[in-house]
Length: 223
Image (tube, rainbow, N blue to C red):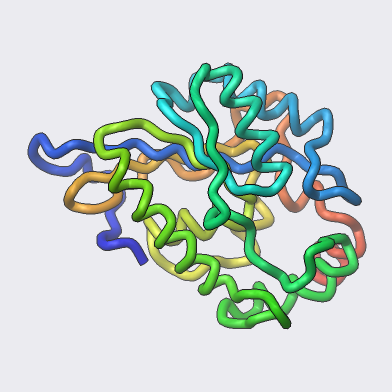
C-alpha cells in the first residue's frame, strides 16, 4: 500500500505535486490480446484528443505490445517521449501465451482469492506490491511533473486500490473501460484521488466485460 490514502484532499503547503494519469490500454484482439483492435486504436486516439489528460511531460508503459502501442499513439499526439518499464507489466499468470483457455482456467481462482498464485505466476497482491514499488521509484524522479502510465486493465485496478484502499475485486475489473483514464496527485503528504478510471467520454467505449471471450464469461458467470 502507498504511504497515505486520501480522497478529495488537495494537500497542504507549497510542496511540489506530481500529477499521475493512469491509462488503460485500448481494446485488444480476442485471440491476440497483445494487439489493439482498430476500435482500440481509435479509442486511444480519442482519449488523446479529449483533453481529459493534459500537460503530460513523459509517458511510461508496460512492455507488452498493447500497452506500448497505446503509449505510442499517446506519445505521437502529446509530442512527448514514451518509455517502457517491465515492472508495469500485467499480472503474470504462468503462461507466456495467454489465450481464452488460459484465462478461463485461471481468472476464477485469481479473483476469488487475491493471494492465489497460479503455477509459475503471481497473485493479485504480489502484482500490486510490484506495481507500488515501481511507482515509488518513478515519483522520486518526477516530483512536480505530470506523467502518464499505461497499464493493462488489471493493473489499472490494482493501482486504484493502492490509492483508495481495499482489495481488488472482479466487478471493478469487469467494469474497467478500455482506454480509460484516471488521475491521481502525489505530494509529500501522500496520494490524492482526482478522477477514478473512466472512459465515458469515448464515442465507442467499452469495458472488460464487453470484450471478454464467451468461454471466459461463462466460467466467470457473467454471460
